[in-house]
Length: 282
Length: 236
Figure 1 (cartoon, each protein chain N blue to C red):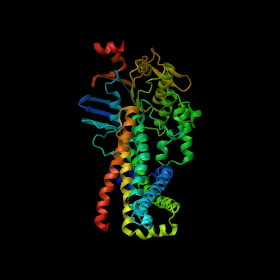
Figure 2 (figure 1 turned 180 degrees about the vertical axis):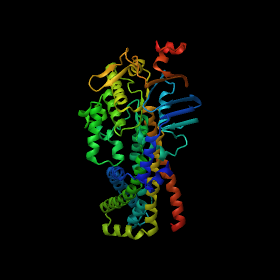
Figure 3 (figure 1 turned 60 degrees about the vertical axis):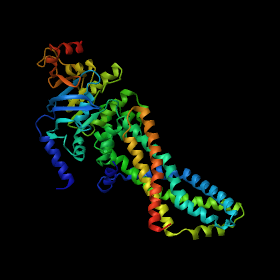
Figure 4 (figure 1 turned 90 degrees about the vertical axis):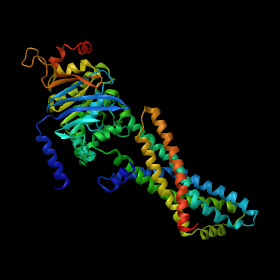
């Protein structure tokens, strides 16, 4: 079997997989003797959006990096598309990452490349013809409404624009899983709403499974109670409708001090009896 | 990291465009400092030699002394140190900045191995270009020496003849093996400290300083070891 054929077979296998897209079982990891995550377990089904909430420094970003194989846990099992990645060789993880998009906390754009080269990075690595790569870059930049910035360098962009380029770079290959690491962190409220609308647009247009890290409650609840519509843009889900104002595919995982203290739906979260969660939400 | 960078040479993909970009940056970019260093080292060597050899009536041996010193020792070591100061620092700061701004993680997340993409091209380019930069430094140094020697009354033809006659095969091999080691040290040390950078901009500065110090000291230590080994092989 040639390399292309085996890559094609692996992709078909991923697309056919029907179990949880992300599955963490008893994951623990520590740095410099301090345990950051303690036996964390959860699963994300296909098409679902899991919002990771919690105060700063509780291991949310670490969890996201674990999900992308950028860090190895000290113990436990991580399955992405049903494949165990904790024991997977780095070369195979690189192949798996072709199906995963990631938006970093500070965008992590390559500062020596233009917006076009940044967004097309993965396509260039896959030797996609230049003409097709350009077309797809324009398409991705249109999605984030930033096609006018195609020839600019990251240093010429504002924080919000950089975040949008980062989203375009993550979605250009049509990933089956997207990891957003604090996509609105450090942005003003108006820009944050624009970014959340984009995250929602990707959720509702492409139905991509996603993990969204945030410590901004308003962003989390906007995602849980709104939907993107091609005509009207972002709009609230009708409270008197069948969904009772809440997106059923959006769930919450709350971390505190490295432990999972909540894993459930929006409704369960707002009606929780846990005093710490109540205080956090207030 | 060294092993992975070398192993990546034998498996696809090889980033040829990055290798050529680095060759341009390291090789062509270092040319001015190599020309200046080589030239003035040759000049000062000739100046000192003429003064010292005059006492023994051996001024005619100036060419020989300058050529042997440049080809066997000063050309390789000074080229290594100059390129180390310029490029090990550049590699550590560039890769270090990428590390602290999560660009290395982004590269991995986009399916690219940073060692293959960043370290291997720098390693190949440094080893390859330092070899030729050393040859240029040797040649320019001998020419600089010739210029000073003729200015002090020596015959240019006799100087160059003496230089040519004094060099044997072993001397040239010794002088050309050293930059291969120096190039390897510069690239691996520079990239290593870049990849291990932590702690923001202050960390980048620290990594840059460490890369220059470690690579410069390593070049001199390895120079001694290679010289010792070469003397063992060639007898001089």
